[in-house]
Length: 258
Image (cartoon, rainbow, N blue to C red; front, side, top):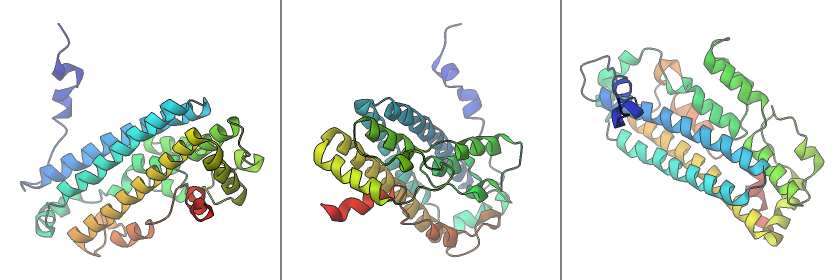
């Protein structure tokens, strides 16, 4: 039998995954939005892994293209919040209790993305059962170099004076500001337009993730206010604490040096 559209995309399986636990009309939207988010998180992780390979190989044109694709996906992620915000507080309340302990805080793929971007916290793994697939995936990400490490190696191999200590840093620690790295980045902007373009795309990536975080906070506040989050999470108060923390602080610090 010839491969069909439905067969290639496993549509019977895909369209059978939406299983509301109430008779409330709006629960379907809630499920679809979050399932689509997880698919996009999977794709973003796929692209960031590819980006790291391209950076380590010194492939600037394809790295820039991949970054641009990731940025387009982030715009879609932000746009999906516009759809989710059509759900009023009363409409969400009509089925919220059916979620039981389920919470977006349990999205291991988003935690993986945080790790990839350099925001590593060992405690973020604690809610996932030891020995489970999610815990194993997070542990692997925790022990691996992050996107920033691949970027610094890319710059060093182009002849820029990235300090050896930055190239050999402990990759299990969060990315932290480094004055010597900032000096190298200023030189990149002044002497290497192609690499400077990649720098600016990294700033766009950082800004795009921060934009999504901000819109997510406002969506939660709009829907449940400052109530405890689903599953007993801290809700909007925790989400607010994640705002305006750059993934790549050195790229923001150099703005005052030009």
